[in-house]
Image (tube, rainbow, N blue to C red; front, side, top):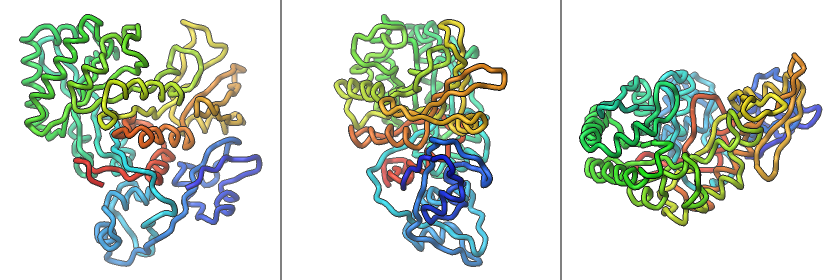
Length: 430
């Protein structure tokens, strides 16, 4: 795999010709239109098939996978044109293997809302070790706020991934309730009811574990939160269910701020089986224009986490989104719009913007002026930035990548992931 940076005069046709690959492959791997204009500075994934298979009448995907010693999921990953579907036709060419060596193995988790597009979900599941429907809430009684998760669970199981249950203190208003967290952490009657309801739901729905995300926990509740997570671990592990906890992106034990003070890395790391570092949102809706996950900032969080938690317990959070800020930025007034990597590139093409790449942040960005004459600055993810983030996982010996979230198309991400890494199956096998 190489990452090609579009130069003036490049076209989909000329790039495919330059590398000697089918134009259709370049289109699919990068989510392009055959006639699409390209933005100068745009990153494109280029893969080189090493072994291919021509489908014969009567053959099935599972049979072809067995013939070549592949898992069915790996065959899907090598052939995004299938979109996770088993439908074949005679004469179709499938890629069995690409040129290049893998750089390591990792686990992959992704979060999704119940309304994710069916085709997008089906195409994405083969790349996942786990799929986490977002989110079960908590009522003041300890009952659960139900989630319409049946389709997500079924898709995970059909695609060979394991579903993880997600529990949070997110309210209907879209914010995390520290008061609700305080109630659960300090009222043992409510906590008892919550634990009982969790066990019932986990087992009834066939979940493979529990992912807990309490944010903005009061500083005075930090010890109680770790104790609650430890109780969940002691209760659920004998049932074969691991517990994961999401952690705010801290760089020191005494980091001030409501987001950080209720999360004690050492005590939470000891209390649970695994943790997710939420290493994103440096660039955010109400903040100044900057990368969502600048690599030096991400690295700093990882290096602090490793002083408190074993590497093999740590998931690295990876963003699947960017932001478009209107300029000039005015603190307290300016609001950025969230967008996908595909939408970001489309904006650059539409307005003739040249995409830049910040070598320090390891993130692409550009500026453009809209039809009403207002300037904008956009930061997003591309193949280069994703490659840089994923490389931290083997560098530090981390467990894997946790994507927030799967709701936006980002074909390049999955091509890079598949080209460079073996993806673990649920349970840890390859």
